[in-house]
Image 1 (tube, helix red, strand yellow):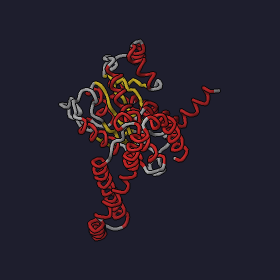
Image 2 (cartoon, rainbow, N blue to C red):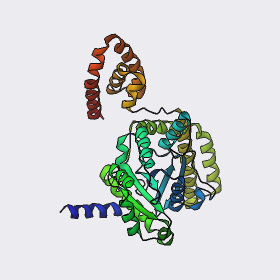
Image 3 (tube, rainbow, N blue to C red):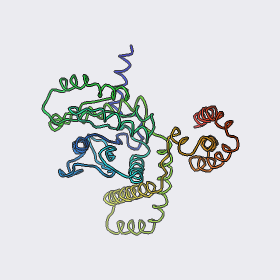
Image 4 (cartoon, helix red, strand yellow):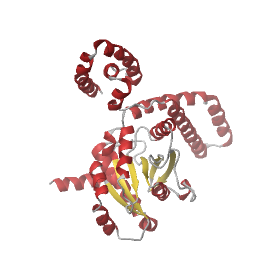
Length: 352
């Protein structure tokens, strides 16, 4: 019975991608990171088009957003810099992570961890730990391990070999056994690997929805506001262009040209808004790190501000108050911390 149910769910996911907007039922957003970088670059070129990265590119040092239509689906692929191979200062790294969030708002349908199946090392666990450190443990449910290779080998034999690797087994367990092999040789022939990847993502979205966290929700809200502001600032220029089109075209041709121009304006405003917000967005520290960074008394105040619905700006204010209370109350504040953290987290969960 359970097997039949899974088959039905799979069939539905292939017929109509889940959790997509009614305006664009084929949209797909993917956030990618990997090791080595070359596999990440090669997968990106295979999914969209070779021009995404030059053949000379051997590294991704800045977050890159690429878009295209693949198998009749509008695809957005956001490549993050490699977290181990790039010796980026913390400030620059946070900026690139903010860009990754804004470029994939309101959240990715899947997070791709791109690996070379013939070079699986324990360092890969460290990379996954860094990702969960910055994005939270919940990202693991949305992470799909992509074992990319371009060798003319039978997929089954590669999978059997990979499954014997202890490092891979640990990675797969952490990601809920969500993994897929991507054979570039086969994909060049019939595109079957891309179709299989999209189908796997659809299944994951059907089960878990798209990935989101407080940073994504904050960024999405700010981007929408910024888009409206930018649109308003362009209003006169837009009206002039529309009048010019009306003087040049008529009938269906006019409607087509207006739609094309409108789409271009929307895209420009969206991309500019993403960059503006990425520059301003604060990167929230996970609560477990927050306690170490600001002290337990301050964390108590921060949790209070968050529970009261003040958001992360409110956390900063009430953290300062909490720090003072922590100093006054001393041990009592520390003893109450665990209870308050659990209580406020539960309150926040029930009210969102």
